[in-house]
Length: 275
Image (cartoon, rainbow, N blue to C red; front, side, top):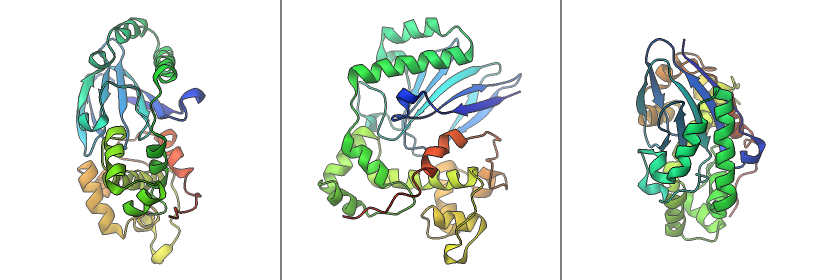
């Protein structure tokens, strides 16, 4: 039977890693739909070659073989692990981690012949060493990501002014550190905000008299439910009903994603950006 369990990262990685997980497939192959999150991911099949999944701009369908165990790490936008390339060259791509990190990955693969929990601990320890030796998180991009969270929509030019950058400078820095433009990142984070509200079983605030899916759409920054439906189709290839399976508190895949979406909900109370 297929299972997927998310959990928060180790405290030392909490500033750069959004969530970690262990996924197991059963006797049959499993079709996984990966969605854009604004960040990169590392997928580490136990007994197989690890991969880096670049920033996604649309859905990616992966068929995971039967009897496979994968340890995964999802990074926050703008906080990818040290890489030999800027992220706009990795958008919508999968790359072998050995090609990016060399022989150190081979040593890690050898050590990963362990329980999934032990393997997850080893991966996080390896990442922590890499961040300590070559941290390159752009502080202005990190601030931009905070401002682009969905609860208080902000104009990109206003954001650039707030950061004392030109719009073109902000775009260039986001392309390098996130992989996408600020506008594309804003769309992705807005949709992630909607999913966070849905996963948490949140009650719509009632703004504009909307409730249910329409109310959550407005609370996440969409103009209305039709706006949400268009963006959902663009980012996932599915309608909101198909994605959520008709239930607002669980996606159709049946996975529990609260550890991944909790950081989004924690930002709801922040005041809006002022130039």
